[in-house]
Image (cartoon, rainbow, N blue to C red; front, side, top):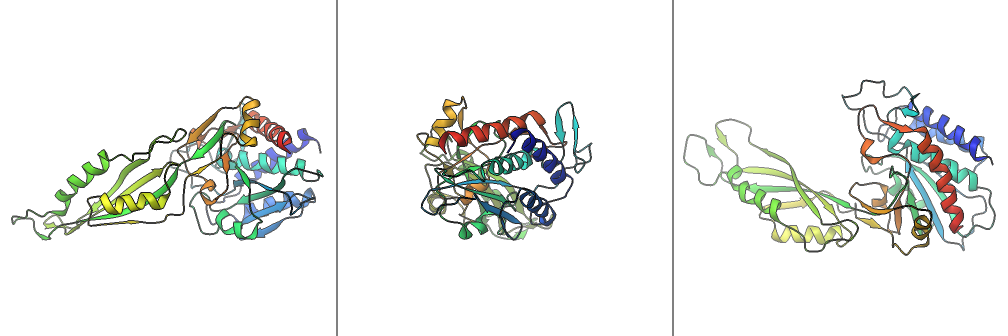
Length: 354
């Protein structure tokens, strides 16, 4: 199969994906576009909700399995757009449109790569491709819902914009809801137990607390109070103040360990994690996939942003064309050259280990 032709078709697919709204949990139409690609190239595939998945033609259950994954849902366009977010067009080598960079360029590059290798016999790894839904909202019908339908995954490449460098670790995420209590009263009367004032020491604790273990690739655990809510009337002292705390977890801790620490030490009357399933991810730098990337001149780093890696329990890395700093920005774009180079590199990388 010709790489140049595949690349041209992949860019055309990305234009179609951009032109088709696919907000998280509303990806039905983009799923159809991906189905059409597999039908065109006579690749057997399956669909679960809005997730499309396929196995290489010569799948062998006795071989290890390598997952190629990226997502086709998008966030909603922000108010800063001056271009039509659903009008896919090229200006000065840039393909503009919602989801072009996050993560459409990665997705079509992985689809092209999988298609190129689909018929190859005697691969060292089986290849499994999943074009997943609901990544942006960590929804229940995304990659996590497909994993039970797949054989055990031994290693994974998750397509996210990394400038084609190797994100060999990714921070996990826990969002906590906390309550600081006080005594309700009329604002005109003395009250030494105002729940809002009581949060001062709590906020100082969160601002100053540090977790002991620091990761070589991901640095320290980052904990940030992001929301405060209290009171409903100007003349009523509230009995409760609600805090939301965003915690980015390095690979030295499990999410449960972080939750145990905060439940024991945080000066709150109640603190509850919304979910513990978005754990940190990593792959050993000694893994042959990483070593192959290094020999091909790529850098390794730790990523602070969350992706579908959080759904995986196997070694995984984040790798793809595009730049993470463009994600979720107005007038989102990806360079055509990045897609062209991304497809070539994905193929070159996999051929090194396959």
